Amino acid sequence: MLSYRYILVLINLIPIQIIGQSKISGTYPHLKNKNISMCWTLENCKNYASTHNINIKEKNINKEISHNNLKQSHLDFLPRLSIGYSHNINSSYNNGQISLNTSCVLFDSFRKTFNVKESSCAYNIAETDLKNEKINISLSVTKAYIQILLSQQILAINMENIESTQRKYNKSEKLFNSGKLAYSYLLNIKAQLVKEKANMIDASKQLCIDKLALMQLMNIPINDNLITNFTIADIEYTSLNKFYKTQDIYQQALRLPIVRISELEIEKRTYQLKENLTYFYPSISLSASYGTIFNSAYNIPYPQQISNNLKVNMIFNIEIPIFTAGANKIRVKNTKLAINYSILELKRRKMNLLKEVHQVLYEIRSLKKSIEAANSNLEAMYCSLSYTEEKMITGTVTATDYIIAKTNYNKAKAYAAQAHYQYILQIEILKHFQML
Image 1 (cartoon, rainbow, N blue to C red):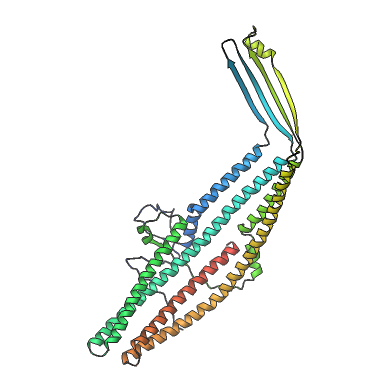
Image 2 (image 1 turned 30 degrees about the horizontal axis):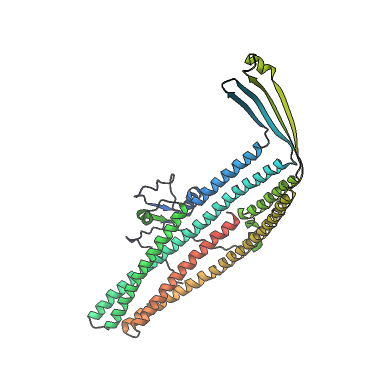
């Protein structure tokens, strides 16, 4: 069996550095330093993105807002208390009033209690949504990271092809100068060399685009120098030998935050329904005030007026809904519809999750076979190319035959690299479902 090792080449246009599982020591560097050069591991990228990604920062703000709303719902239980003072001055006399006022709800059919529980669910949703966003960003970072590794391999393959074809061209040029090779052979090989250089430029451009995508996910300050010096470590290849059952992975995936969010939405809507039902019932409140008045028109000292005019007022208030019943019915009906919608959303998310688990397990099993087939194909294409090169020297095959063999070999290398990193990606997605 032919052992094939991918060759990584350092070029001036796009520096490539793949280091097996190297770690970043210390804290994260000051990324605004344009001269910085470091190697990021996948774990480093995930950790940095979980702190700096814009979407995650937005979810953090939403969580804080929900937490403040929850605090506010608790404070609504406190009675209202205020101090009032008024003073009227005119040309004839002046008067005033001082009072201490309070009011509280004695009975509202547990409306505020349901509001607190609804706010608590809203906070839990915001907190779970933050966890879900971190998981999604982590998965997106993993995909972008592996895409860079693949693009680096494709670029390295293109550079290897250029070196190989350049050596073939130099050798053919000597044969042509000695009269042992036709000029058409030389031109065909030169055309192949130009084509491979163009492919190398395209691969370099794609690598820049893939780096940019990962850096944006991580919210790293972007400039040309940082993109050029942004390097990542390779991921160790591990073959998955254990057989995973779909139902086992699915049961683990049900712990993902995306499922919990739907469950909390149903719970929140349920409390919202209970709160809306309270508007059909009367509410009882108490208002009280303790105060005094004074007036300069009376020939009595102010302290004595304040003392003499002290009084307490208490008011019991009962509110019975009459004309709002129709609006309340519509509100209740809409809330019930919202609960049914949330239940369907939960079912849909579980169905999608089961489908995704099936897909990733199918992909892993299929890609494992694809890697074996790709390695066998790569060995066959290499033997075919070597044979064609030998026959070309003797003139028994044309330059076109050589170019076809070389193209097939290049495709085999690219396919092997793609299958390799696709397999690694599916393994990482499987870990995502297992919440590892």
